Image (cartoon, rainbow, N blue to C red; front, side, top):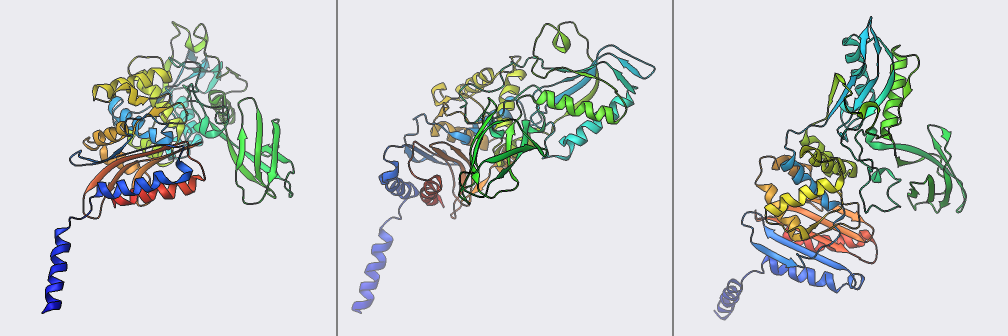
Length: 464
């Protein structure tokens, strides 16, 4: 009897003690995170709400502006859906000046770009370089053009000359992930370099492109095996850093600083192979003068081919799954063009900030410098990111946006990484069926990125 009464007492006591709330669990985990000596000089923010009700679960520094790195892509994605539309497509037009007589075009063939970042991309069958060029030539011939006696030109329309956003750092902009967004983008504005390193640490590294040596100012050296890719290309034509010793064909990707010229060269080769031209003059893709050529006022361009990009859902999918900076910068400029503004980063960013201000998010919470998050000068708040994710949840295009989010740690979320910055923001459905929206940003941390990630996961695991 005594044992029965004791057991009954313990059961009553257990039932009488309320279970620790998710907010309390996160608070305890976050407190342990902040105590870590590696993060004592870091700026940290975490904001969590219930998805269905918007009820606050946890808030620490949610109005503090921090560098978001690629978590900024969720802001650009949602803004693009709202300001461009789910059915938006980029359009590239191919036309000509002059006249066609007896199958010969006496005039110029002109490619007019609208900033399509997918043109020549390997991610879709319809955008692969060979398929794009074959389709153009097929349609040119169907129009009656059998020979071209003129130049190949580009029309850059309302795009500003400067393709790279202010605030991007010198170490990034020569590499594939730091390419600019132009009126005409081609093959995602990148090309591969093949590196061959000596067998000993400190040995020189040979740089080749398409099998031929490349004339870079080459300061690359071999490092210990297993050290990975630490090679950086610079805008001035130099390359430095290290790759592991003993590599015979180590591939890195560089930014193409003149993708329009690359496109015209590829088109010219294809036209010659098809017998449509013998000799052509190519204009420099960097020539953005409004006073002559295809950009000149009064020049009539007769349309022949219209190249249409994949739909917004598909672009957003790759934008977030593979964190392609080019896509974010192209979307920001498209937002500007859609609103009859010059295709400039600052114009698009202003429209994005104005839109969210109308939704109740102050401009100070979205101090954006680009569309991708690559700039270390970006400052956004976790509160703004969560509010934007909450806004998206009520839209018809939300399933496609949600599907585009990567999965880390068993959670649907966008990650972000630049020097000294790590972030995660997204959605999670707990075992009890309750859904949460969160943003977690850390700036100026010490130690390894991989170690920080595991400790951030430990905090976020309390949502499970």
